[in-house]
Structure formats: C-alpha cells, structure tokens
Length: 175
Image (cartoon, rainbow, N blue to C red; front, side, top):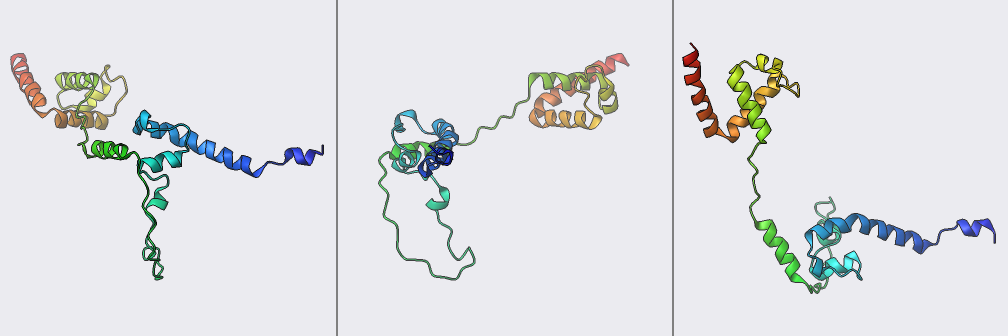
C-alpha cells in the first residue's frame, strides 16, 4: 500500500470528529439545565433540543432582520413551517425557573466580620494603625481595610450601630 493513501483522512471522519467535540463541550452544560428523563442519548443534540422546543443555534432561531444589517432588500415572505414540540414541559420548567427572583446573598464571612470588629475595637477609625496590626494577615492597605469596614457597615447597618454603641461606654470607663 502506498503511504499517501494511509495519510489521507476520510471527509466524513472529520465531520464526525467535529460533532463529537461539539457534543463534549455542549452536553455537560445542557445536562445541568435539562432533566435527565427528557434527554434521549440515542439522538443528536440538535434532535433532542428540537423535540423540547429549544434552539441549538440562536443565530438560526432568531434571524437578524436585513434592515439591521444595512441592506434595504425586502425579506422573503415565506415563513418556515412550525416545529413539532414533543416535550413542552422542559421549556415550561425553564421559564418557571427563570421567572423566580434571584437570591441575593447579602452575607459576609464570619472571619471578615470578626476581623472588622477586632480592628474597629482596637483602633477606632485609624486605618494606618489597622494596616500595621499583627492580625492583618493579608497585609491589607489602609484603603482596603476602610473598604472592608464600609462593606460591613452596608451589609449589617443595625449590627454596626449596636457594636459602635457598645464601644462608647468602654472608652468612657477608660478615661
């Protein structure tokens, strides 16, 4: 056999490899969103998504009008046929999940809260002293420490007021 025929790659092999690599990139993401019982492993990604009423390629699903592209040519009046959606519950579940309000995580770590309280308790508003403190493990600059204290003030305003109020009697006793 001549060596040139062995080095030749069959055209369908490259297409198959491209499809497999696409599925390896897309499938893990889709499996997080789409319920397992709705996915048929014997069908392609495009076929599975079409059955659920989802688009594989958003550029093909919603075409850009020619006017937006700068062309003044009238578009064709042909409308593509309606697609048959066999699993509409997947889209309904996704819409329901998307309509839920986003959870806001307005919490700080316990370590950061303790750090800020320690700094305020020992140094008050002196950020340069805070930067030189031995408990400043991450070697924060005065501005970084000030920013962390402001974040604490914004996240827990009532707790901050109570903490400052509890510090004032201690300072009066010392004087």
